[in-house]
Image (cartoon, rainbow, N blue to C red; front, side, top):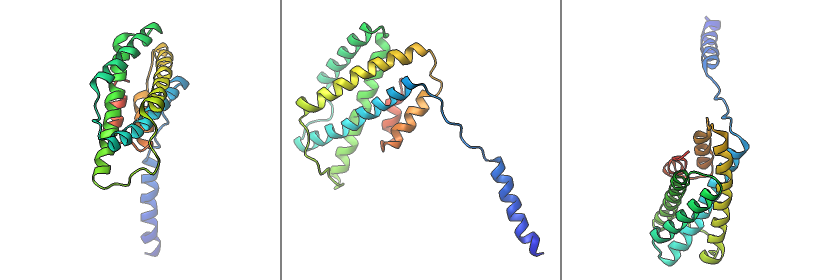
Length: 179
């Protein structure tokens, strides 16, 4: 009786443990890894943009600036050999995700959430040039990713990395949508 009482739970645990599968790591290329890191870096900067907009009561959306950015990225991407629709869809998704990050951050701060302790950088002098550099790097990585012709795990991988960096499910879904 003593043995059965302890043996049965151990047997059950062993059976269920052997049935459990360990998730397989997602195989992505160096270009896909780099693209994902750049997407996450862009979203990190969006938090700073949100902080500036919160402090200065600036609306999250800036349709004119967004249109200019997309037009410039399409022009630069086309010059690199990328399909204009691919570039447009990709950057529209990144802008949408960025605006979502800003809106979520501002909503949090308005509700009494902990405010950042750092002084905001200058939007025009510091942040936009940093975003422009990331945009140019993203285009180069898109060229490399597009040349591969396969992206078997990129969307899932990028989603996971973006979520790991503390971004919401909706932000991650928006950012990876064109992948």
